[in-house]
Length: 142
Length: 66
Image (cartoon, rainbow over all chains, first blue to last red):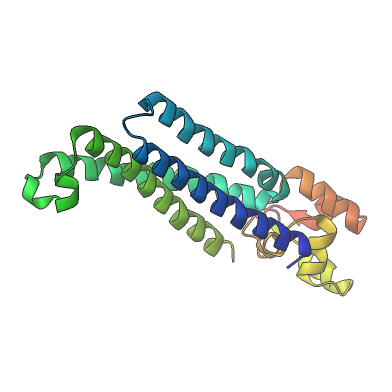
């Protein structure tokens, strides 16, 4: 492993940690000031944090080689697509299930909260499928 | 895609990491090319050809090629 690889890894870890902390800060801020901060402002704040994280990933994209890029592209294509299928399946299940079958915490959500939880669930499922796709791609090239 | 990368590298006594460093790619990339599981881009193929001072077709060949 080269020193450049180590630098890229360290940068990625700090980017991930920064993104998580930033996202957490926006979430806590929006929750604490729920009645003071208008929803569009909180939404813009959250989007800005994520866009910053995306901008931070540009140097990493330029640094990695073509094989690593293809792994990312393939994992997003297949992981994102297959993850979407599971997300839709979950949406159908959530819509058709009697309330007793849904996790108690989710049943207590407001309509807005349930909608937001559904959106986040879609993203999380796609990300999980991306990680699986990425691991499979690299395993197939060994 | 078949390649003579492993042979050429061995002739020079280079490890996969050495070659990866010279081509500015990861060791995993070299391994994937050597095992024929990844087809390099034209840009990378030219880079390899320049490094070994050989024409591309002397290093890489199509699977169907006799």
